[in-house]
Image 1 (cartoon, helix red, strand yellow):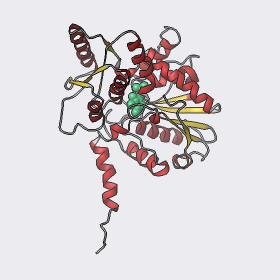
Image 2 (tube, helix red, strand yellow):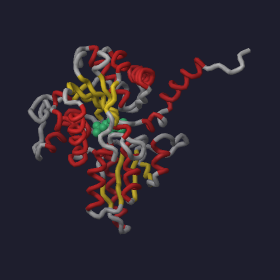
Image 3 (cartoon, helix red, strand yellow):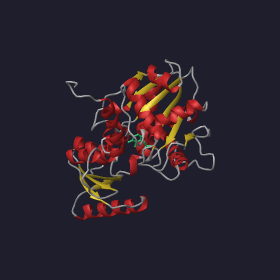
Image 4 (cartoon, protein in one colour):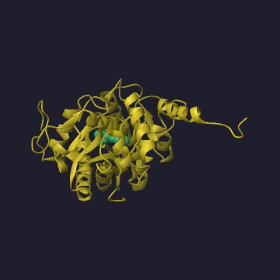
Length: 330
Ligand SMILES: *Cc1c(COP(=O)(O)O)cnc(C)c1O
C-alpha cells in the first residue's frame, strides 16, 4: 500500500516555527492509500490482516464518534471483504459529518454506546461481539485506536522506512493518542529521537506508551515513574497541548492549523496533528527542538475529522467571510 510514504521538505513552515528552512520535513502518512489515509492504516495491516488470516468474518472496534481509527477499520473491512461493526461513544445526531459519513459510505454498522467512559465502551464491544458470535459470525475485536503490540508493529516498520529516507534524523514529532504509533517509532528509532505530543485520548500517556514499547521488546513490560524506551532512555513527551480536553479546539492548535495551511498548503486536524504541530512550536520555543538538525513532523492524517468538528469549520469559514467580496463591486 503506497510505500514508502513521501517525506517532503517544509521550508516555509520551518521558518514560521523558528527553525532553519532545511530543518523540517513532513512524513506524509496522511497519503497512505486506503480510506482517506492516516496512521491507523499501518496498524490495521497487522491487526485486521491477522484477523482475516485466522478466519474471522467481522471486525469490531470502538472509538469516539469522529474516530479516524473507526473510519479506517471500516475501509479495511471493505478492502478485505469483511463485515465491520463500530461501537462509537455518543448518540446519533443531525450533524453526522466527517468520519461518520465515511463510516456509512464504507458500509460499516454503527452501534451508539451513549456518553460512556472507556471501560463501559469496552463492555459494549464485548457484548456486541458475543451477540455476533451467537448469530454465527466470527468476530475479532480490534483494540481502541488499533494500539495493541501487534498493531504497533506497523510503526516499527514505519520508523525503519523513515530512517532510510532520513538517516540524519534528529527528532520525529508525533501526536500521541492511543500510543501505538509512538511506541512503534520508539522501538525502531530509540526514545531519544521521538517526541510525542499527548492529545488527551488516554488517561496516562506515559504508561500507555511504555507498556506497548515493553510488549514490543519481547513481552517485558517497562514501567516505573521514568517510563522508558528500548535502551531505558526516558520517553520524550509533551503534555501541554491537551487544553480543556480531547475534543476541544485550543488557540495554539488553531494557530498551528492556520500556519501549516498558509505556509505549505498542508491540512492538519484539530484533535491530533494540530496538537502535534502546536507541540512542535512550543518545543522550538523552549529549546526542546533546536535549529540546525533534521526534524520530521509525522502527518498522521485526520482530515475527515476536521469536517466533523463544527468549531474548527466555523473558524476556518470566518476567514473567508472576512475577506470575501461580491463581484461586481458597488
Ligand atoms: C489515532 C491518531 C493519532 C494517534 O495515534 P495513536 O497510535 O493512537 O497514538 C494521530 N493522528 C491521527 C490523525 C489519528 O487518527
